[in-house]
Image (cartoon, rainbow, N blue to C red; front, side, top):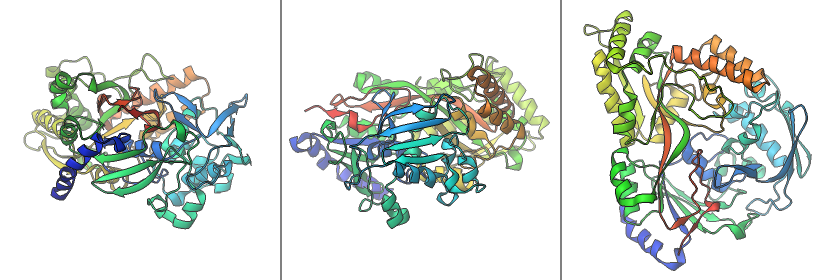
Length: 529
């Protein structure tokens, strides 16, 4: 840690000079939440990784600067009348960074790779709408039965299990980005190394120094290279958000992906419109490990949830930049019912909630003579620390004795996905597409990668399967609402807050458009002289 801080500040003078010099006018110093765990698009899951991959690769479709779906490698597509077959027409001028053409076979290879059980992709489920994808990923079908085929070099056909109204939007996600088959075959897992990576996006990977920076440079082979203004990007990790703020105020970075909640009032006053706060399709929550004996009783989980003053967290800890969450699915999401379920104590006073929570804990066998002991795990951040400390104080009214386990972001999420050795763990989920399924699927029993509550409920799984088979959107919405009600009854994960994106954006950085996905590909931006 000390070395990392020294490295960052030792470079500060050089960065300042680079920003000031005309030769580096189109170098974008981009502050991020932390280092990526991987740059393999089939093994990623975090927003940090998505931001990098969005610059390195281009999918069949992409988000524009307002997070609207537009053509990418596919210049157009057709959908069959039954909604099951999508035919994508690929551009003639789409090329890889080594000059190879991007072909339909490249997408076939990539889509098969993410579903191949050998890849161990934690996020393979996002593409389960493709015919036989789930069965292949579970090892129950041959990979060649996946519903994808290259009709010819420039025509890709994808067949679905059932009509999926949001399928095209799924294809902008990093899991649907293509890999360069020859590079993967030659280098295996090392295809992500700078000297080996062949990408097809606006930028190529120049270097990756952990805890220092990741450098991307504009790709001359990208089909719209002449429309990409920024020549070089330096992704600089700042798990300590306050450090990024200081560097921003010193003119040493152009943007920060997040800011400390306690600094919001000051930053509003001093930086004005450079502080960007916008609605964001996401939920901030605590995953409760239901496999832990002391957390297996829903009464305990409900009691823990009841005494959390979400309004205090939103207003005081997060300075009004978050919204209290009494449901799992964020408000305003598409394809859902207006009468969505919520926790039944959402309108109950805190005093009454505390009384109810104490009674539930007593029923579960906990109290002053037998205090519940809980460890809260969270990834390094002042905001997460302050949230965890506040919640520990709230839980103290129940006699809960709380300790903390703090890890860096990559280690924290690796633990959640792979080991699940937590009691209670901070997590967040940003919608990959505007549909309630994208939040509710996290709690399906087979979704081992993201089911941080270790939730297993056949009733819930059956409702999710029923919704997946329903083609009428209104009827489907009702089924999904029923599933959410079951989840809120069992509460394997405690929703705390709905997100707003909170960024610092230099007035020199042009083309950053606030949007509900907080997606900001560098190809749409430029730096004013």
